[in-house]
Amino acid sequence: NFTNTLDNIIVESDYPSISDDEISQLRLQAEREYKKISEFLGRRYEGTIKIELSASYKIPKANIREGPRMGIIEMPIAHVLEGLHPFAHELSHLISNEHDMRRYLTEGLAVYMQEQFGENHSAPNFGENLHSAFYEYGLNNGALKIPMADLTSILDFNAFNEQEKKTIYLQAGSFVKYLIEVVASNVNQFMKFYQDGDYKHHFGKGLQELESDWLNYVRISGVKYKPKKAF
Image (cartoon, rainbow, N blue to C red; front, side):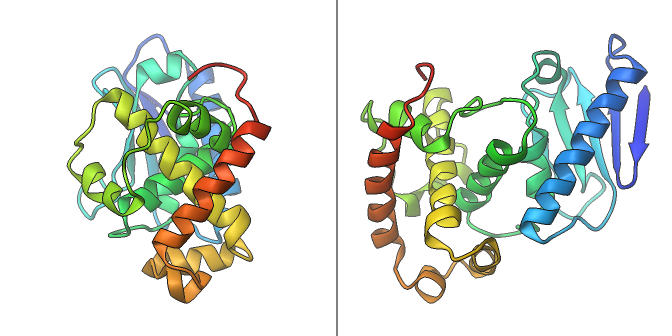
């Protein structure tokens, strides 16, 4: 096993072809992304974060629940070797202290943090503007079938295939991006909303009205920021 640590972040790998220097660089990347996300959200993770790089993991996962693996991020080595490791996405799950918040908001925030602060491109938008990626892959292809209020139960039960997963994560990320950049007066207001999920109280509109406003906004901005590649 190779290990490198700085402050509250540790990176470990059981893959023999990853050198100490590469692990050090990955740890520094995670540290930079952690600091940017923490400063942006006004939150920090209380405890040690360990990123485990392993061929035994199939999908990236942050363990946020109480237990022996709390604070551990499982990162498939294949993602790292391809340069598609979503450190910012998984770190945001720990930093945001989400607990039982609606899954479409927690995943949407994580996707948005990866877009804003991830140093490498990764799923679902691979570096493209979230609105334009969702417009091209979702709205333009008629793939948006799921009301935002129904996304949590679908995410909780993993009731989707890979194509649907891409659309769902783009949808959630685009919606959170809209809430933070357009609806909320600042990120602090969004984070207060993030704690209780009360749209009407914090934004003066209910979910259905905001969802309609967001879709109209995406149709405009999606055309403006046309993706460089097909999704």
